[in-house]
Length: 158
Image (cartoon, rainbow, N blue to C red; front, top):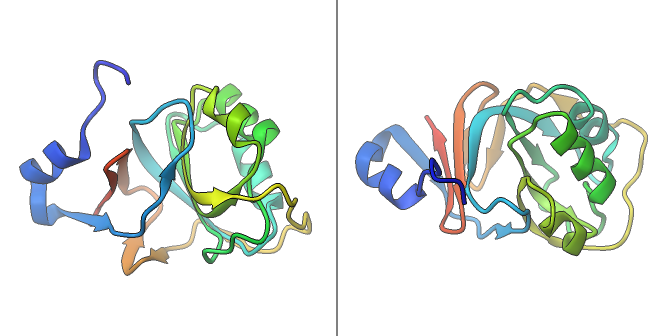
């Protein structure tokens, strides 16, 4: 945890109703347990081509939020894509779905929240859309909004 890391509980106490809390229980799977930044979004289902392409571009400290429909049948990110995110300056990735290579990802300087893991690869056809408003667990997540993640949970600017 970096010295400047924000704890979500303290942030919620400070800002309260300006923030939405995602109640869905994501696991903290990356090397950074506390991460935050402006959101970029992708909606895709069991196809990670957009995730791979996006994380290969400059992240500038952003957090990619991927709505994979909650599917745990295939992984939307593995260690190579996560390493690409690190190399391109992303602060973290939140996946409403599964990752793979969780031991390798845990060793990377990247924040990662996901529902779980599955070694099965996803499709690579590019199905999905980016830059769209997402709704995860009743919380709207918009491109450009700030997001804060730590082991307690996920807070999003309204």
